[in-house]
Length: 433
Image (cartoon, rainbow, N blue to C red; front, side):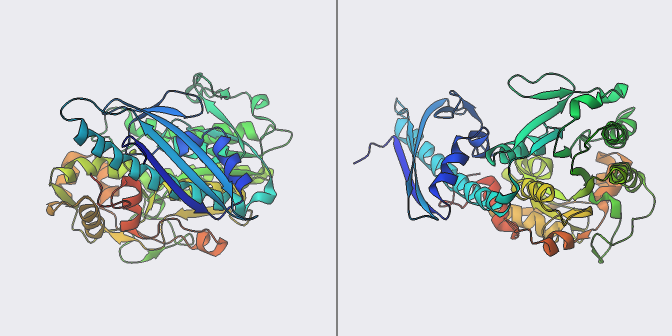
């Protein structure tokens, strides 16, 4: 019998053993499999030893891959934890084992989805990809997805990042040496100052605009000087393009909303990116909806209040929103790079938009907490800046028609299922919040 401080899981994976081994051995595998709700510090380059930060507990990790015919295999995961000591040791050990069970469930879901995504485009080979905004929530999750697929990722950065392959630029000064971005197959442009940080101080509007529009102009201007431009530019964008949509379905052919800060900015942002098309580059404007992840964005802001039983509905509750999990967002980014059919504006959201009331109710269900408060639009305007408050009050029934037509396989189209995945709740037993 295994000791209490050892957890072993064995699952069957519908992928050749060689594919699974290559995926697990490539850079980024450990980061890709780390749940967003856990604070983890790696203690070895290959992730064979890592530490749960709270409580400080060292975990040893080993895996075994066994062939099951030509198209499948069995993966055995073994995690060994230093046994807790003291009077509370037994309770602590039970808690840690439950956390490891949640980690197992999360990593298997990610591994299966990522393997399927890479298998879909295996004939494309390995690409050399340049990414800006690589240290943000999206970039930090996207890079491991790409590197575990065998792609080489280089970061476009303002300052050096230890251990990473980088290309320098200075967007504020308008400086980017075109010679240093020669030879890439794809550019992914994710730069943009964070917007949801309460009331905007002096100069915030200008910084938000410049960090999106002007950086895109700089990148495309440098791209125009290349002897061999990249085949594709995927540029982050936003559903702010549509403004107030009411009860109408908003797909990529819907017109822009009435003039406002966000509508005007997104239009200028996308126009700057589309200039690359004049140089033969396939351009995808990724209109990203509300991203759900405890690592950042709306869910990170909502979660503390819900955990304390103070969950609230924004606005009237009838406002619609296009949503997606962070795993689907990185999956869509990868798909946009690889799928030649996609070009122009593409809505990055689930096929079924939800209302603010439905979103809050789902978070409450998953966290096992009541939702009994409402934050009216008047309070939102008091808490946030006028530009952000206006955008938060919009109703937008975002429909990703171009992704659906191109055959993207949505990972978590069900809201409750997506929340349980990103929060690690209910995937194994009830879990904890």
